Image (cartoon, helix red, strand yellow):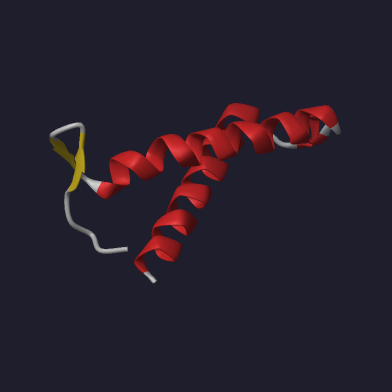
Length: 67
Protein backbone atom coordinates (compact mmCIF):
# COMPACT_ATOMS: atom_id res chain seq x y z
CA UNK A 1 0.00 0.00 0.00
CA UNK A 2 1.28 3.40 -0.88
CA UNK A 3 1.01 5.85 1.99
CA UNK A 4 -0.58 8.69 0.08
CA UNK A 5 -3.96 10.30 0.40
CA UNK A 6 -6.93 8.22 -0.71
CA UNK A 7 -9.79 9.81 -2.63
CA UNK A 8 -12.93 8.87 -0.70
CA UNK A 9 -16.05 10.50 -2.18
CA UNK A 10 -14.00 13.43 -3.51
CA UNK A 11 -12.35 13.97 -0.10
CA UNK A 12 -8.70 13.12 0.38
CA UNK A 13 -8.10 11.16 3.58
CA UNK A 14 -5.01 9.65 5.13
CA UNK A 15 -4.73 5.84 4.90
CA UNK A 16 -4.56 5.47 8.67
CA UNK A 17 -8.01 7.07 8.98
CA UNK A 18 -9.36 4.06 7.07
CA UNK A 19 -7.31 1.56 9.05
CA UNK A 20 -8.47 2.88 12.43
CA UNK A 21 -12.17 1.88 12.11
CA UNK A 22 -11.15 -1.49 10.67
CA UNK A 23 -8.84 -2.09 13.63
CA UNK A 24 -11.61 -1.02 16.01
CA UNK A 25 -14.06 -3.51 14.49
CA UNK A 26 -11.49 -6.30 14.74
CA UNK A 27 -10.74 -5.33 18.35
CA UNK A 28 -14.43 -5.41 19.23
CA UNK A 29 -14.72 -8.88 17.72
CA UNK A 30 -11.73 -10.03 19.77
CA UNK A 31 -13.23 -8.44 22.89
CA UNK A 32 -16.47 -10.32 22.40
CA UNK A 33 -14.59 -13.59 22.03
CA UNK A 34 -12.56 -12.84 25.18
CA UNK A 35 -15.72 -11.92 27.11
CA UNK A 36 -17.50 -15.03 25.87
CA UNK A 37 -14.77 -17.28 27.27
CA UNK A 38 -14.35 -15.24 30.45
CA UNK A 39 -10.80 -14.11 29.70
CA UNK A 40 -11.38 -10.47 30.63
CA UNK A 41 -11.85 -11.35 34.30
CA UNK A 42 -8.18 -12.33 34.51
CA UNK A 43 -6.78 -8.95 33.49
CA UNK A 44 -6.12 -6.14 35.95
CA UNK A 45 -7.93 -3.37 34.04
CA UNK A 46 -10.21 -4.61 31.23
CA UNK A 47 -10.66 -1.21 29.53
CA UNK A 48 -6.91 -0.61 29.46
CA UNK A 49 -6.38 -4.12 28.16
CA UNK A 50 -8.87 -3.59 25.32
CA UNK A 51 -7.18 -0.29 24.43
CA UNK A 52 -3.80 -2.03 24.34
CA UNK A 53 -5.20 -4.73 22.08
CA UNK A 54 -6.53 -1.98 19.80
CA UNK A 55 -3.09 -0.38 19.57
CA UNK A 56 -1.50 -3.75 18.80
CA UNK A 57 -4.08 -4.55 16.12
CA UNK A 58 -3.76 -1.09 14.54
CA UNK A 59 0.03 -1.19 14.48
CA UNK A 60 -0.03 -4.68 13.01
CA UNK A 61 -2.39 -3.53 10.27
CA UNK A 62 -0.14 -0.55 9.50
CA UNK A 63 2.94 -2.78 9.31
CA UNK A 64 1.15 -5.24 7.03
CA UNK A 65 -0.16 -2.43 4.81
CA UNK A 66 3.29 -0.87 4.55
CA UNK A 67 4.81 -4.11 3.38
